[in-house]
Every structure is written in structure tokens, then in C-alpha cells.
Length: 213
Image (spheres, rainbow, N blue to C red):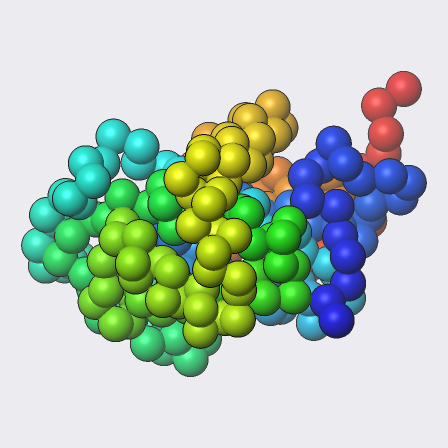
């Protein structure tokens, strides 16, 4: 069974230096590669709490066509994905991620042991399999593969309770200064963007900053 962790920063009690808060979006390629940085943090004995954060709420339900990805930034992301063992096939559309993020946010409360598999499956669906994660049927199929109770998830998506959990996570992030993804809060420091592995490891090993007087 996975360790029970607080779901949001304001739920944490006692010392939280070993907790890392990570805000991500399933359509963010830096977050896709960022799965590797999260694994690194966990290998260094930190516990990572993953929180959904929609970065493009203006995206229509049908998605937005972006076409081929070319340039140094994309070349670098492809190299990083390869080094991390993450297959990457650029989708030609940016999907609306609200439904998928809401499903994962609901799952990490209702089915915390299965939520990581759902999150990873939806990342893979968007960045490796060419699937539309805005489609509720796609989300539910991946939830079923992660052994999540589909009837309960369908109800939470329909009545808005899953979306409200996502809103709570987004509000918690904004209060701490999160404006983009990926963002990690490591030992009191806000880390925005995909840092090199060695720099992320250095931050993980560093002492937390002194508390304000």
C-alpha cells in the first residue's frame, strides 16, 4: 500500500522537510519529462505529492491545433525524454486537460494507491500514444486499466466534485506563487521549470532555508 500523504500543503502537519509539492499539467511536455525529476527526488528519500494545475484553461474542448514541433527547445525535450526512457511522439493538438486532471485529483484522494498509474497512463496517452485525453471515455479507460472504480469516478466528474478538488489544488499552488508548470516546492524553495538532474539533486540534498524571524 502506498504511504498516506497529505493531499495539499495546508493539510500537512508537523515537519514537512521531506515532502515535495509538485504542480503539473498532463499536456505540459516539461511535466512529462519532469516525471524523471520526480523519480530522482524519491530516490533521494523525499516524498512527492503531485497536484494538478491546468495551464491552458482557454483551450477549447476540441483542443487546439499546433502542428509540428521544431526548434532547439523541442530537440532538447526529445533528448531529455530519451534519457529518461519516456517515449515521445509530439501530438499535433494541445488537448483540454481539465477532465483528465480532475480525474487524477479525485483518484489521489479516493484511490491513492492507483492514482500514480492513472497519472502516468494519461501522460503516456497524450505524449506517446496520440490519444485525446479531453475525451472522458479515454480517461475512464485508463482509469479502468489502473483499477479505479469507474462508477464512482463517473459520478465525481458529473457532479463537479472532481473538478472542485482540482480547483483546490490550483488555489493552493497560486497562494504559494505557482504560475506555471512544472513547479516543485522543495524544502521551502519554489523550483519552476525543468531543471537539469544534477541541479535538482543538489536542491534535494540542501538544507531548507531558515525560517523567517
